[in-house]
Image (cartoon, rainbow, N blue to C red; front, side, top):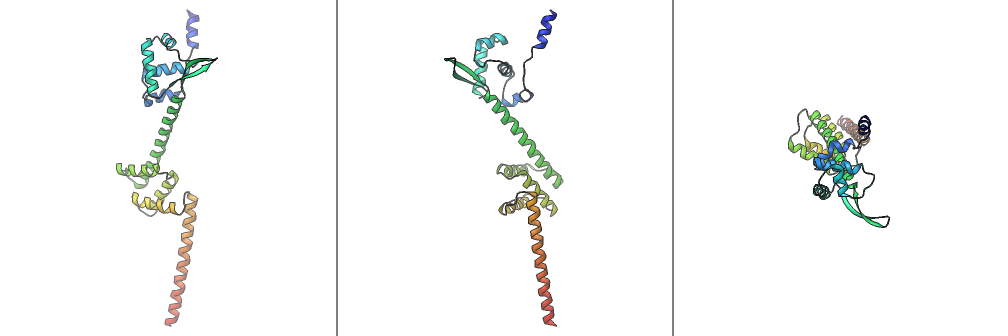
Amino acid sequence: MNQVIELLKSINYQVSKELLFNYKKLNITDSEFIVIIYLINQTSNIYNPKQIGNDLNIALNDVLELINSLSEKNIIKIEMKKINNIRSEIINLDYLYEKLAFSLQEVENKTDNSNIFSVFETEFGRPLSPMEYEIINAWIDSGISEELIRLAVKEATYNNVSNLRYIETIIREWSKKGIKTEQDVEKARKQFKNKNTKNKELEDYFDWLNDSKDN
């Protein structure tokens, strides 16, 4: 008995925490998840529904329904391949990993976006409205970089303005001028400052000339 218990302790099925924590988001049921864990841990990817049913103590019809459901959800695919000159049905799990990777990427993007929203709410000193969320999301979807949006928010705050229309104007004008990074913003600001300084010097000079003529 002790040997059997030790053997049971040593037999472990592997499942990644990413799959464990996210399989519900892929619309995978608990029963389907058990089948997936079983398939992932098999050394052979040959489709054998009778073997699956025997190993998991599931009726053959139930196995067929679960596999069919996973296939319809594009979680797995049953493909025909030649192995040792014999055509066999193979279970392809690549679709599962692709869907899982896409799901995780969506989560990461949402996290990044929520950080952007936090920047707005911090700078504005208030929660964003649903309409403002939609506008910011539209900027992101159109390909405007997170860095440029953050810089535009800071620029608006610097000018004591806290509305999206003003920020959108900044982003549009910067895009026209090819401004994409903080370095670009600083360079443009210095050029603007130098231009204004020169204009002011010219104005003072002409004012001086006019004063001299009057005298």
